[in-house]
Every structure is written in structure tokens, then in C-alpha cells.
Amino acid sequence: MKTPECLPKELLAQSTRIVTGFTKHGCMLGLSESVTGGMIASFLSNVDGCSKILFASQVLYSIPGKSSFLDVPIEEIEANGTVSEFIIAKMNECMARRFIKTLPSITGERPRSFISLAICGVAGNGIENLPRGNVIIGMDTYALPDENIEEIVPARREMEWYQFKGDRAAIILRASSQALFWLGCVPFLSTETNN
Image (cartoon, rainbow, N blue to C red; front, side, top):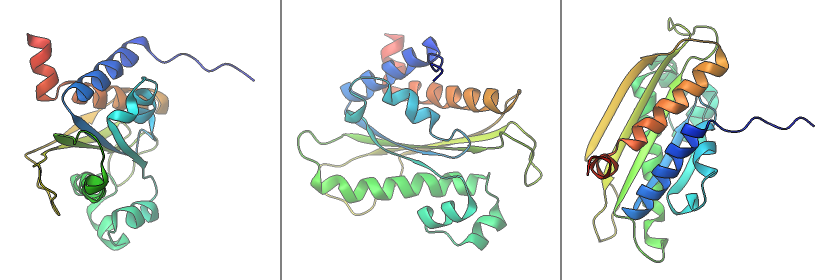
């Protein structure tokens, strides 16, 4: 069996910085990946201690899969598009809801914040009038109160479209890299870098 290539060193270094910083600041992370197929979680899970910050990761690819996991009717997904700000928002909200349900059962030090990051896009042939390389990333940041809660509203919500060049593998790698860059730019990590 052929030995797989090593992970790009700069992305592994960025993943290490994210895991270290999120651990230090008591922040947990939820990932919802479509176009990247789990690559973002794969980079992070190569870092020791990742389980302290990575709450969960879900890969949602097909329309039925998105409909089932996000509890959104297929017709609504088709009307808004599988690569859309609507889907990004639903992916982030789904992960946040799942996280909230677990809060009462968390033992030890309670997280102070939660970040939900979602990504979808087109790595192959164009779909829904979107060309190859169109990718959208969204990130919701939640501050967590000390008491148990039933619903949280993001303190910050960001979304951005990208147009990446290259073949399927290059687009997936670039999209994963951009998402890791986003996670490395959360306010508490950015402040640390600038000091």
C-alpha cells in the first residue's frame, strides 16, 4: 500500500495554533463541511489535544443528507440552492443546537464560548449556475453564559464567498486552508498574535 503524502506543514502549524489557542481560551468548535469533505477536521485532528476543542464535525454532501441532518425540507434546499448563504446558516445553526443540548452534561471546566464554522462550494463541474471553485464560508461565534440555556444567538456572524482556481483537489485544499485561516483569525487568537 502506498504511503500517503504528509500534510502541508503550514496547515498543520496553523491547526496546532488553533487547538492551543482555543484550549487556552476555553472555546469549543463545531464544523459542518460539504465541499471540503472533512479535510478541515482532519487537519485539526492531527493535533494532540484536539478533543478538548473539537466538539463535533459533520460532512453533509447530498441534498437528502443535508435535508435529514439539518431538518430542512428538500424543497426548501432546492429553492435556496445547495451552495448558498441559506445552507451555511442552517449548517451553523444545526451544530449550535446540538452543542447546546450537551452543555448540561459537560463535566469539568465549562466552555466560555462556541464557534460554529460551515463551508460549502463547487469543486467539480459547475452546479446551480455557479462555476467550479465557488466556495462560501460562514462562522458564528457564541458567548456562553454560566447558567444552562435552551437557545443561544450568535454574538457575531460572518459569511464570505470565494472563487478558487485549480482542479478538484486544489480547490478543496485551498478552501480548507481558507477555513483554517478564518479560525486562526478569531479575536482572541488575533490579539495574541499582535501582542
